[in-house]
Image 1 (cartoon, rainbow, N blue to C red):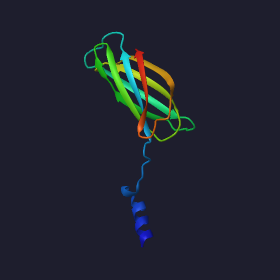
Image 2: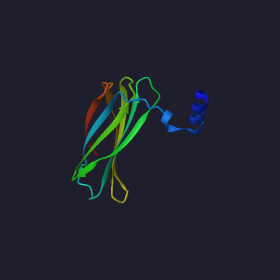
Image 3: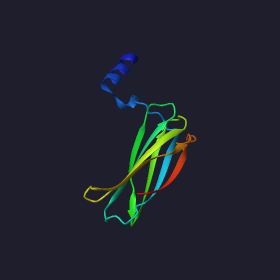
Image 4: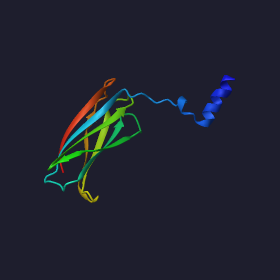
Length: 130
């Protein structure tokens, strides 16, 4: 009986049985961006970070929208860690006009991030100019 009930739940895709891997920490990338000149009112800055833990083929990508004030912007991107070792990090910063036209972009590779402590963060602060 117990197996029949479990099998029925699995066949129906019942979400109660789904398990998620708890994050053992988080990678935090804090971008301070100098835009070189003031961008139009309503412009957006987006920060995309790709993290690939050492020894893993999996690449995690997270995009965050930053705040723009005059000729500077600020973005914070947080990526959950799955408990793997240090990670390689690449980023892309885009400034777009309110109509969607790309104004400026920058890409790069940041120094490797150490493994976040359990329940803590591996933090990287980047100061960039677009």
